[in-house]
Image 1 (cartoon, helix red, strand yellow):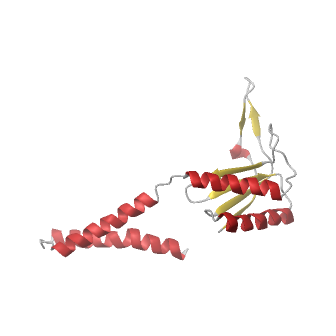
Image 2: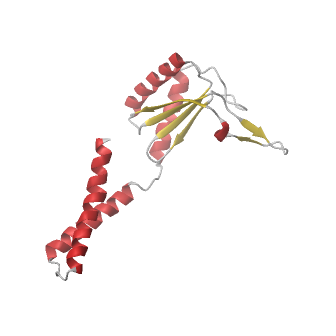
Image 3: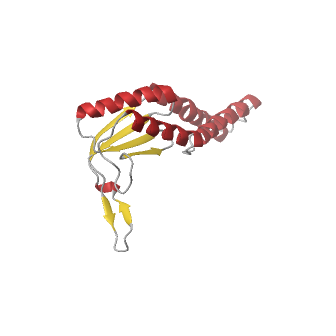
Length: 166
C-alpha cells in the first residue's frame, strides 16, 4: 500500500504540481529559465515513464510463471473435481497486468482451501512471480448451444472465497 502511494506521489502528483507551477508562472508573464525548462522536462519524463511502465501488457514470462504455478499446484495437490469436458483438474489460470489469477473449482472445505493456499505461498516464493489471486468457486457452469457447441457461463458461477498471495 505504501509503495503504491509513493509511486502515485512521485510519478503523478509531483509532476502535475511542477507543471501547474510552471503554467502559473508563464501565465503571469514570468519568462522561464533553463533550469525551469529542465524541471518541466523531468516532470514530463516521469509521467511518460509511469505511463510506459503501466501499459497493462502481459509478458511471455508471466504466462510461463502461470503455467509453472498451475502445473506444480496440480502435481502437489489431488483435486477432487475434474474440469468439465476435459480430463484434467478444474484449475484455470489467467495472467493479468498486475497479478496472476488462479481459479479453482470444487474445493469447498475451508481446511482444504488453506492447504492449497499454503502450497501456492511456497510456489510463489519459488517462482518469484507477480502477486497471485486465488478464486475458489463452487462449480463450473456451461451452456450447450443448439448447434452442439458449449460455452462457459463464468458470470453465473458462485465465488466461495478470494485470497491474495503477495
